[in-house]
Amino acid sequence: MRSQIIPAAVVTIALLTASAASVPAQTTSKDVSQKASETGEAIKDYTIEKKNEAVAQAKKLTADLDAKIKELEAEASKQTGEAKAKAQAQLRDLKAKRAVASKKASDLGKATKASWDRAKEGFADAYRDLATAYEKAAAEFKK
Image (cartoon, rainbow, N blue to C red):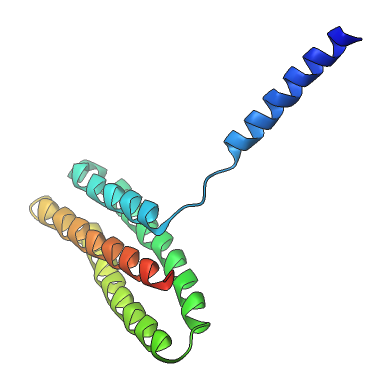
């Protein structure tokens, strides 16, 4: 009887450990910003021959942050008074930076061999600004 309990206990512990490991930790705004910044910087490594991949990656990055911005908008709509006004100002800034990053992603698609490096830099810089603005806004919303 005892010999059956020990293997069952081991299996139970292994299953609990595996299921706990598969549950992702809550993603923080800083995690999002860091990952976004690193991924935005990775665009710089693309060559003109991989332009289509770079454009697809840039569009995915901006779409991912769009979803996060929508979450902030939902949080902002719950606020009142001065906090709401401040949140709306931050969202306007965030959306303006998002528009710049979107334009720079579009510029990547139109870039020629001669303008490729400049287009990559432009997107990376715009995306870094967007990620930083998102981090700042998300931190404010948590106060």
